[in-house]
Length: 245
Image (cartoon, rainbow, N blue to C red; front, top):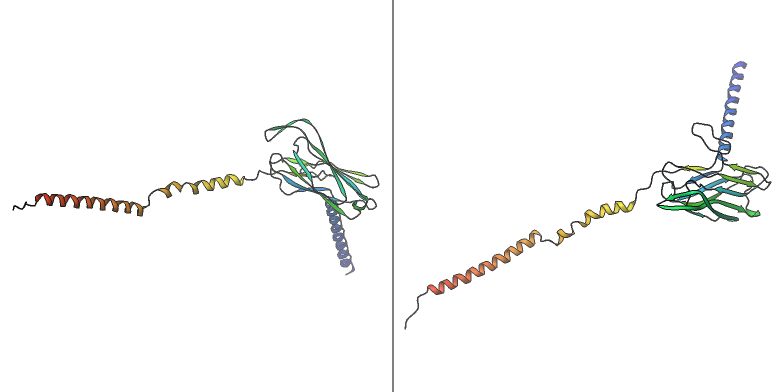
């Protein structure tokens, strides 16, 4: 009886420990700085949201710097204001010219830095969201990597810049990233294709309808009948004998 009870307690303890480890792993994973794209379709524009948790028990997050890609640069970057944070977008020369939508691009936004005032720094057990609007997104299947540096008030800088390799364990500080998808269908093309057949019957509407053809034939027949009547009356008049006095 006691042996069975001990086995039961050991099993329960192991299960509790396993659940605790899983929960700790999930918490650690969720604590990573990561980015979400609301529309990653190639050739378009997207809103990127960086979720930044504070991982320090004593210090606050006072600055965030996101490095933008230079091999597939964005030609447009704008920032959504965050209360108490000042954002600065830096533009720099590209390592080499890039062709985007038929145009040669030699300069592009290279980084965005957010800096907090004292009252709005991210404290322990807190997080903040930072949003960008970017475009044009590169070809479908491109992994857009956005290395990020998180600075704390105690001088610590955590660099989220490690590359995630498929099939391998996630690194300790993975760089925020997302993958572009296929281009969205152009609604204009669909509208044109639908509208064209609808417009084609217009010439037919101007043509005579069966009722109109019948009416025209009736008028022609009436005219022919009147002409025949007139010819008959003329012939009859010619054949009448002339009365002599």
